[in-house]
Amino acid sequence: MVLPDSEKIRFDLQIIGSTIEPESRVLDLGCGNGDLLAWLETHKGVQCTGIEQDKEKAAHCIARGLSVLQGDLSEEVEDYPTCSFDYVILSQTLQQVYEPAQLLKSLSRIGRKVIVSFPNFSHYTIRLKLLFAGCAPKNDQLPYSWYDTPNIRVITLKDFRKFSSDVGYTIVNEIAVNTNPANSKGNVVHLLTDLRATYGIFVIEKS
Amino acid sequence: MTLETSHSRSSVGIVEKQYYTFAHPPELLVLENGAEFGPVTIAYETYGTLAEDKSNAILVAHAFSGDSHVAGYYRDDIEDEKPGWWDSMVGPGKGIDTDKYFVICANILGSCMGSTGPGSPNPETSDPYGLDFPMVTIGDMVNAQKALLDSLGIERIHAVVGGSIGGMQVLQWCVRFPEMVRCAIPIATTMRHSALAIAFNEIARQSIMADPNWNNGNYYGGSRPDMGLAVARMVGHVTYLSDEAMRRKFGRRLQDKETFSFGFNADFQVESYLRHQGIKFVNRFDANSLLYITKAADYFDVVESMNKSGPANDTRQNKIKYLIVSYTSDWLYPTYQAKELVKTLKRTGQDVSFCEIEADCGHDAFLIPDDRLSKLIGGFLNGTA
Image 1 (cartoon, helix red, strand yellow):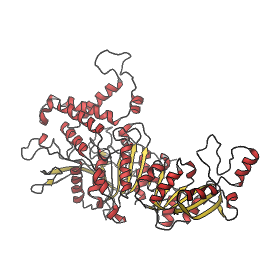
Image 2: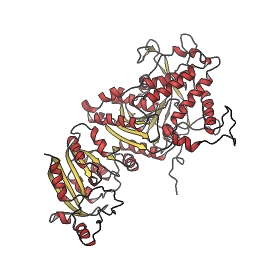
Image 3: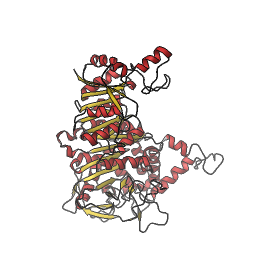
Image 4: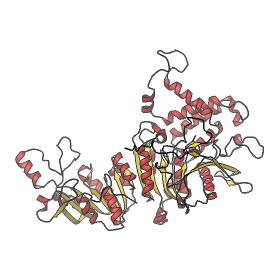
């Protein structure tokens, strides 16, 4: 029995959740408070595991009945047997990963499909800010100043399309969404996604 | 307003130590070293109510010098007597909720807290066994617990929980009787002792054996090796603390004095504290039991069997759910050892959760009331209800 903290999870997590087959095996890297995992267990009967660096968040997940390992995700993914998971989720974490290419290579070993979501740095608000204000851009999705950001890299949808193919993946599904952090509402963007999407969600699998 | 702290929750109240004796000749208990041994008496306590289908049992395994008295009070306790050693964790509404679960704790084989050990009378001679007591292992302790559960008609336990040597018993349960275990919570423990851990145990044993009163273990009825046992406890106690804890608790503060005595009295508070711990221990523990239990812990090694275990050939129903807990300041079984266990479980496809708890009080942190551990365990147990 897993108790979701709230029925309404973040919009981008709802989209990720909707792409996952029922009864599958899922690994969520950087699972935070476990909202997505709890939703998946309750609504899709998914066999879930999470990895979370933050001790308090990991303890919170375990205390709500989820299987979660506290640790560094780049290290923790190494120990699983090949094809341990149907999906590995990297939700809003890639921009904080030290060696993304190495990580995605490891993920192609342990998971059949990888779902990656990240804030889109080519959103028009970002472009305009850099163009007109000349300052390191901030918006609702990337609210940090250059000196206090946990994000060690910025990614655009276009960048990720190229990157995923460079590290040996094929894009199975690309969903561009327009939503705000911590918001359960949003919409899927179909036109001019590179400019209008605040987040990109990619389902990729090994080529 | 209600205060939701572990202190405001109620106690299991008055409890009673019970005894189960088995392995009467000729049905002796076969030990891991090949010897046959019996009869065996196991002291145990239970809390809560066993469900009709007997599905709600939780086995708590105690640490090296612990006993079956996990929670509550005895009827003949003196006033202000402390409750059982894990009273903060076990009770109505607590982490291990006795309103839901039937909790069992058995004193380990080889101990001196009611179960058969080197201080128990040898039926052949009527004298205490002393060193005639066989070398028992963690596996033998677990076999004795299994015999107790059999006698209670319990075929499957919802969880087995324990810290330190209690955690070793948890792991032993998982490799020996995996089909009986639903959840396992090994806390502040290891799959096998490091050289450091063996070294400290060896110092403890040598200090007992160097005491002339030890007399090859044959001291019952005469002067006991109190000095040796006290020193052994002092060594042990240091390994249960941490640099941070000792700095905070004692620093270089002096005990009831302003200046050094320039002698060998206990000038520093830490000296006085350790002497006090040593003397306190002598009054409640048997030196031979320390020898046997520390040796059992040193021999313990489940690395190979944990690597071979796992649900590869198992159905999903039989998968054990693990919760591994370590403490940042535990230098006896540091987090890297817990992580090795986690790694092994991941490699063998087990369902494992892991959390390192931030605490400066060292290895013994799991015995100190802490809502974080209670919530972790409570939530984990509920998650697999």
